[in-house]
Length: 329
Image 1 (cartoon, rainbow, N blue to C red):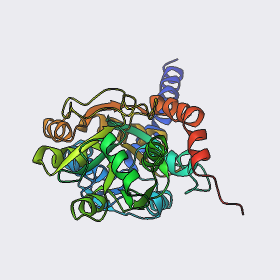
Image 2: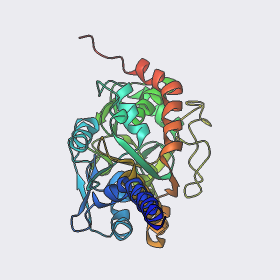
Image 3: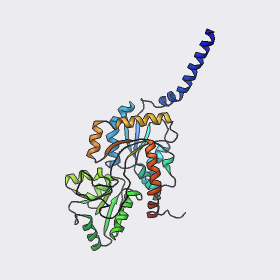
Image 4: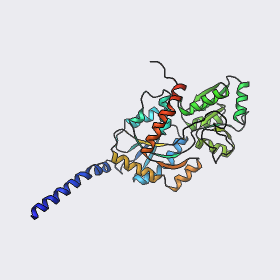
């Protein structure tokens, strides 16, 4: 009798251990002795880069290892995403890139496939306005209405800087120019840092950039915001009207930077890293940095992000396909 009880107990224990094996295996796949690389698909000093660097320390502490930020600009984010897709799914290579930015590049023709369907989505780090139109403080126009008038008096001579060709930022420039009836040349740069330098250097008349890239310049008095792509005006820049107020764009998706892992990452490891991201977002220093950048820290998990991805496919994707028709093969 005792032998039978012992055998049943042993079997139950072994079955319990077998059930735990995937969890143990997933946890062991991540080595704290190895650093984590966070790939940023744009040049240094842009909003994507600044948020990544603000999260270096708290994310490293949450994961128990060192986090390194690696800038891989170019190819409308393709260089960065291809680097992630080729990486081992061991949690030591991550990508920080907003899904709406990634999807925008696909729908505007930069990608041939929906690469976000291959990658492992881990969580969003916050939210902010998609983009802003910014001009130098000494520009010959002080508002969007004055820019319209200036452009009409100087046809073919107005240029706007921004990130890679395609995507929502480029669409903002196209839509605003079309609504105003003006001709604007779009000049692409590797990120917010280079486009900001081009604006300050007088190489473009204005630019489209994200609020974290614009606010420091506005605060310092060297530039002014002309319009913001957001449902409401920003508390940090209350004098800047929304695109909706200007009658240009009624709907613009809210933007946030998302963490991604390589394809085929185990669910257990993905959950481990998602939890570490959520913990890192509560770091007081990160929250302070994010707020200075007009970025609202807020963790959004993978399930909610998948809903956002689906909404974008339905509502925004067709607009981008119309604005940036794919070239015939």
